[in-house]
Image (cartoon, rainbow over all chains, first blue to last red):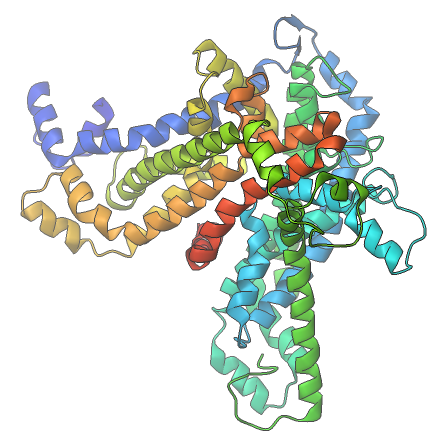
Length: 318
Length: 292
């Protein structure tokens, strides 16, 4: 409350505290304080406090009840934890595969939507729909579709004669990652399409017209005009897509719980299982989980930094 | 970029027509693939369990039945789950509306010491994300404060996690409103809060509608947070947690019909809201993500 007083720039000197408070009240400083209070309080409790808390158990073995100081043991364990480093690898694999498909697809759809064809409003509404459904529930629906024995996908493929035996999409090591990625593409491409569309709408119409007069065809126009003009927006959208893909784990948790045999285990899912326990890991290992989550946050930070660096380099070249 | 344009009256060459046809075909195929899972689960929820368990290629049921819904509602606690979901989503919406409208207004209109710092913290913690680990201290805090038995703790944590986006949305919208409006109110004798409550709030309606939609959707779809908080408290689970718990329960294979009905109950309300308000949804998300 004392702080809010200081903003009065033209205040006369040597006023009593009571007088100062009265002036502040008249200017609405108390109102400002109380209007900001709920947000700042929530920020402190929900964001800042947990962030600081994470550092507390870095050197401890903590199972939710009791904690022991173990020094650098958690760090040493991390270095030798093949499951964790595998999960880091899977995270990169998942993010790369997801982005390779979702970014071009959503860009193409955005360009098509931008033609303002008849019915494109309806198409846009349909493509965007998956983003409003809970990814946990839609992942469960996909688990039904991909079910090995009575799933509808196997039934369709069998009746078309494409496969002879049922494929265990989510339970087989060779298909599980692809299945997870298909679900991720389904759930996310509409979102990025909308971002791209808002980027496209900022490209002026007459640029296209002059390109048309100059005799450029659709594909030339796209690569020579749309893409370069879109590039500032493209960078922001790509960054959102990259950081988003590295943090995904809700859908994988429902689809495979990291299985089969850790094939779809990603960093943040592994950390979740360490901290809250899972079927194959009964006691939580919170101290170790905090170390891994800091490393995971660092990895995401480095990836983002590398991306920003590369995209700036790209600027100089083009 | 005009590969084709439907309103044109010009005569198209055969090549353009073929291109147009394939593009339209592509759009339709993508649309079908997008809709398919939702149609599949909604139609599937009217199938008899025996039909679901044998599988087959039919998307529509052989015989339509609503027994699955009755069973899910009465025996599988879906009545409770639905109430919890409604409570949770409405609570998150309400808290988000109150906090983001006030904070967005203050950030747009007032200067005060530490403003840059607080604003910077909001931005920073949108990006700093240590993942699920942050739920552990909050969970332990809720237990200490005896808040873990109600959904209010989930509401505040979820609203707190999402508030930055909404604050930026309101602040951005405020910046487009002329300051003369505030000044006129002040001259007429309104205090700072009165100006907000009586003059600004009505002007903010469009953006608050967007915040309401986005936060309601966020609350309705919240999964990991309520999962953690209701791990041992079955009576407080929302739909997302209740229905996925069935899948992991072990006897899941036998209860396909309940899970289909449950998933449908979880999807339909938010889908209905979306059908009538899709324009605001899309507009709000664009503004929140790219401009925020």
